[in-house]
Length: 217
DNA sequence: TACCAGGTGGGAA
DNA sequence: TTCCCACATGGT
Image (cartoon, rainbow, N blue to C red; front, side, top):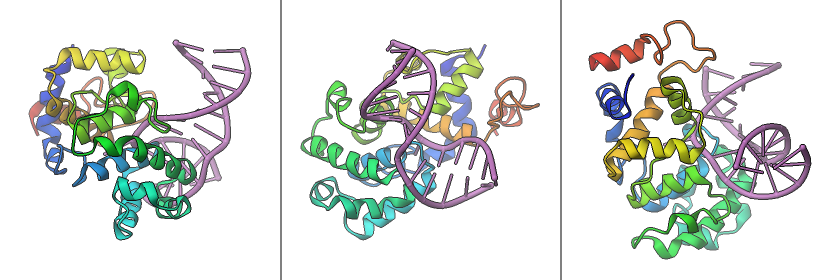
């Protein structure tokens, strides 16, 4: 049985290149804390390609900045973030997140339990923000992580249970957590999503990609 | 055409 | 606690 720590090395061999993007943290694109936090909200149930369009719209208007979002008209925000969908919810979320998090920017990270009380921030978004924008070692469990954990190890647990499995199996360092989560996303996007597993699926018996990872290709 | 994407909130059971 | 659904857009 493949162990958690062992898989990390395999994924690094296969998808390590993807870790180079991202200036503040491995993998997550973004040049500022603000950009990462805004992206974390906009990517909720949304393809990253659509998020990029919204981020670019905000950048052009000088609104890739949480302090400015705080004072921007909500309707303007809605129009700018339209490409990433859920614009009513997400414009509202960006406001609530901004007002909470601005005092922490460039300073200490916000406590996780406080972040979770903010409208629009669930466990995954909270951990993404803490990990990628503030470098706090909180493992991010997303749909890819859940699926991979289920297929590889039969894990069916809650968010916190799966998070605990990863965190207890790895050195508690933010960079390890950041890389690992990014690698899982890249690996998952490159492999089969069909249910039940298609023949030759990576995650069970010799998927092409998995074999590639094994061979360090 | 139908389904999916780096989820969350709110209500019902 | 857990399950279900609305929320919106763009790509395949």
